[in-house]
Amino acid sequence: MSEDPTNVPLPIPGKEVRFRHMDDPDVPWQMVRAQQNADGSTSHVREKWFAFSPDPQYLSFYAEYDPGMMVRRHGHFSPHVVFIIDGGLWFGDRWCPKGTHVELPFGAAFGPIRAGDEGAKLFEVMMGDPRSWGDQPEVYEAALEEHGVTPLPDPPIDFPDWLSDLRAHWAPAAEGD
View 1 (cartoon, rainbow, N blue to C red):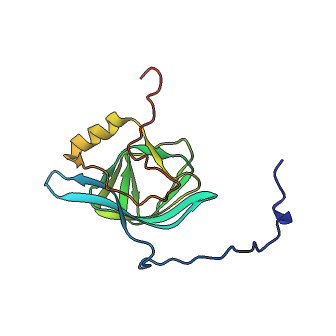
View 2: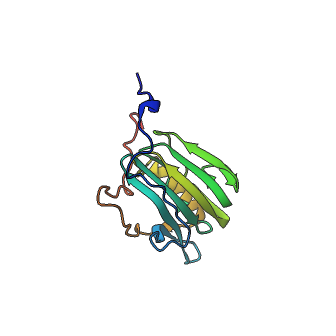
């Protein structure tokens, strides 16, 4: 049986609303992924983490994908919502243009993700542990080869002290694979 939320004394002392803006000096850009393209140029995924909480865990952020940027097929250790503000992305074989809302329930995987010719700008929210796990590395490797892309080492990220980096983590292969 769940608690009755109407029995919680509100407002809660010490809890304050927070406002963030794109040029907020307390919210730096972080490079989270990098690749070398077939033409020798590099592309990145950059993120601005607006809210990152340990209790309860959640993360909300703005992301930018350079044109053609690819990210492995993956899922997160929490429910995850993506809203495409500008440009568009391929999630596997599905094109998702500006205005697309993507819901990724806990335990589901999507991708590989590939930014379109204009790149993409996203707003994302993860409601729990925001770290990811990779799935089906062979699908990602085939997409990289098809587009002549070489992934570069993950750039360092300024994770909070209470969270470790799992960007290199892959889910175990299913039995029978």
